[in-house]
Image 1 (cartoon, one colour):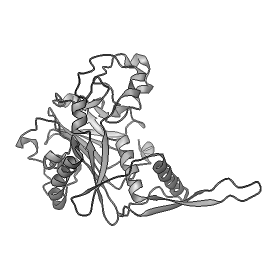
Image 2: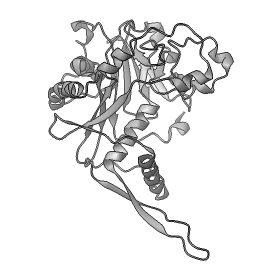
Image 3: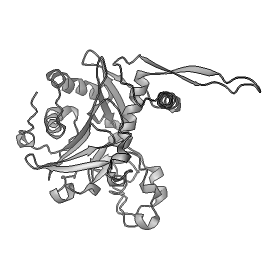
Image 4: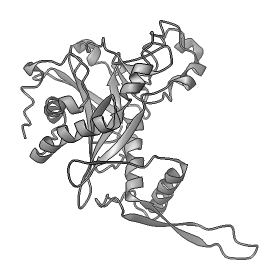
Amino acid sequence: SDCSGQRFWREGERERQERMDADTLSLSSDLMATASGYCLTTEERACLPPSLSILKNEHGFARVVYWGKIQGQAGDYLIAQGLGSIAHDKREASTLAGGDHTTPDFFSTMKMIPKKTFRLGPDGVSWTLLPTVDNDITTKWLGWRDWLKGKGRIFTPFTGDPAHKFTYTTAGPPPPEGGEATAAEAHVLEEERLACVVQEIDQTCSVVPYGAYMLQSGQQVVTNPYYKGLSLEKGSDMSSYLHLRQPEVLPTKPISELAGLSKTMDFLDRIGDDLPKGSWSIKHDTPNNMIIVRSLAFPGYVFFSVVNSNVFGSAYVGTGLRNWDLAFML
């Protein structure tokens, strides 16, 4: 596969927003290869575009994006996400919220773009919906992770088998007075763990440039069709990058800080507010004229944005291991 990325947007800059989606995967994967050093294999370049298009059409998604790859011992998981729906987008086509000011209670009524996560099947064509991360799955995953830490280990690689069971012991019911404590055996499926890890990376990373998304009057987050990209000056500023997730930091800010913000544009957390400070690196790739943002919390997550262009994208390629030593490295 071509890792040069040199031909990228000179072949005709797209007139719409890009994010590793089904229609522009070849272009975006060249850019991502330049940004991260990771190339899609020849087989992946052949199978992903048609399979993503099938996924989009079968489920009626507004967009389908290639999320990245979780590496396993016997096989890797290629991940894609379906965003919104064509019917949903038409329903939500309403007027903009205008320049009203933001208040803390405003964030609780925001509606993020609906998202579903899939893994590619062994046939290279069909996609399997990952389990919904509910309280039950989260409890099992965290229970297994805590048990692992108790054994002096912070991580076990994925096997590559979605049905694999990670078995662990958990405290049994409280013993009767004078009795001995008992332990119960439990397990979390690899597919459940995979869904939790993808969601964790999404919550921690999921970067978009300022202005690429806006809020409509129905409190619905939508892509901004008028987004034209960031200048070199703005693109080099960490405050120009946001988390595409339900805001966690903004609702905690005092009203005095929120007073100058616009509801239409200032509704997502900035990555510069992440803790610990210094969780992100940013640089300008001069030969290819694009900004590259990397996560230090999840090494393997890379975001790119072409200067003065609406072309941007991101992907994660790695084992799913968080950098637990980050606070000590800064």
